[in-house]
Image (cartoon, helix red, strand yellow):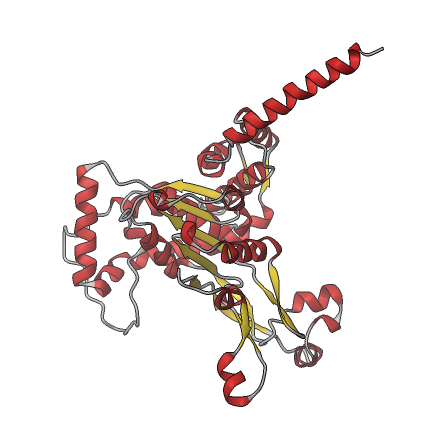
Length: 379
């Protein structure tokens, strides 16, 4: 029998580690362009870390929204995911051709070069890792979806469509910091692409369709403004990230940040073994996910919670049960039970009830009853 997954245990152990009890071991064997604060070095914030890992394991949860004040580790945690992202098979074709398309829709579904490679038995994908793509707050709509290459148009008098950030985010994580401050047109483009897994750019007679199957992660400070309800509904898991209240934990945050600032590579080395173990556990959980089923009691509990909380959106139970499946896969099990539903319910159901819609439907019901009463009174 396969041993129980260590993913949940690794999170607990790493969070409790004290970094200054002894000097971290030195490891300067390689040069890195940019060193991220280790994901496992984020103190406590267990729900935030769990939500991010569940979204990586199962993209069907619909991404994550991190809500909280500045300085609580939201962006730090997201960027720390880089070292944990699992391997994937990525298309080597500039047009993004994939063998599944040829198998499902015929050889005409891929370009000529890829069709010839498949006919020769050559692969058109190669091993790669998921990446973290960050959307700058000052990005234009053209940057996000793509458009005409202005430099080529001016210098070479040629019109050529260029891929946008959404295309580069395919099979990756798209992170949007301060998502509540983005222009509405950009937010709509992101949400449409996320819902369909692709999008089309049209510029005059030119058009091109790109894959856009990404995990959307957003973060925001509610002091700076709220998200529109339709955006909130699209983001699967919601986490309230508040400052730590325990003095020892706050002091440990200071110690770890100081250690990372002074010895970043040593800090990485301190968490290297647990990071490697967690990366393997995530890859195994992701591979296990297709076999995970939800039990009847788990499904009934999910529906009861949605009903009793007066949530109208059908995305609520979908996100809840998909997150429960990811939680079971992370724990090395093939059945998502009531325990899994309870573990993820706050993240999946938080901020989904609309008091406005509750009042609106109550008024509609009252009006309908009055109409039926009038109809019954007529002869």
